[in-house]
Length: 287
Image 1 (cartoon, helix red, strand yellow):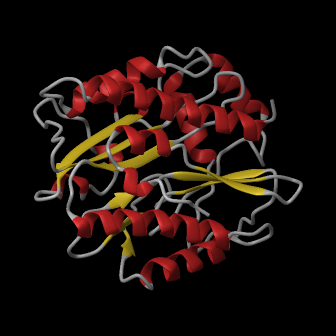
Image 2 (image 1 turned 90 degrees about the horizontal axis):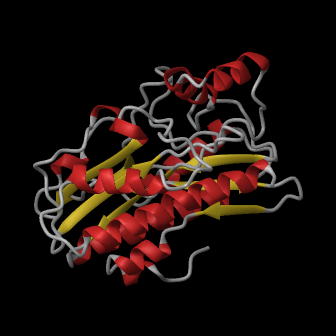
C-alpha cells in the first residue's frame, strides 16, 4: 500500500468510527460533548492499525467535539481547537443542534495522518442549510483551483478570493506556525518528504508527546507566505473555517491527494454521516 493509500485508509477509519459513535449516541438521550468524544475514541481504538491517540493534542486523545445550536452558536467561535476540551455539561440538541467534530488518527506503520473533521446540523433553518452547502462548495472550488506546481501562497490567494466573493471570510488560527495567519490547510507529512533518521528514532521511542510534535512540525501550511509547491505524490488538507457576521462558523476538513500520474482526488467521507444525521440536502453531486 503506497503512502497516499495509507492516508485514505486512515481517514476512513476516522469517518467510520464517528459513524458508529453517532449511531449509538442518536439512540440515547442526554449525550454530552464528552460522551460523544469518548465513544468516538473507543471506536477508533478498536482499529489496531492506528495509534491509540491522535497527533493533534490537546484536545484530549487528539479528538475534538463541540456542540452548539442554531440559536446559540457561540461555542463554535473558538480560536483554536487546542484550547477547547469537550464538556460533560454541554448536551447534544437533535432538533436545532450544530456539531463540529475532528479527529487526527495516525497510522502505526508509517506515521501518516488521516485527519477528518466536519460540521453536522440537526436543525431546519434554511439560512444555515444554505451556509453549509456554500461552505462545502467553497472546498470544492479551492480543490478545483489547485494544480501541480502551484505554490501554496497562490493556493491561499485563490482560496481567500473564493471565500470573499461569497461575502464570507476564513477564521483559522494556528499556534504551531506563528508566522502564518488565515491558513487554509497543510501538508500530510511523510508523503512528499520522508521521515529523517532522527524523526524515525522518535517514532521508535514510543514517546507520544515527542511523536505528535514531530508530526506537527513537519507540516507546511497553505498560507500567504509559504512557497512550497504541489509536488506529487502529495496530500494537502483543505480546512477553512468559514463564517460571516450573521452565520455560525462551518468547517469541512478534506484532504486533496495528488498522484504522480497527474490525477488528483479530494477525500471527504462525509456522505454516510450526512445520511445518518438527516442532512440529505448535502448529498447532491459534488465535483
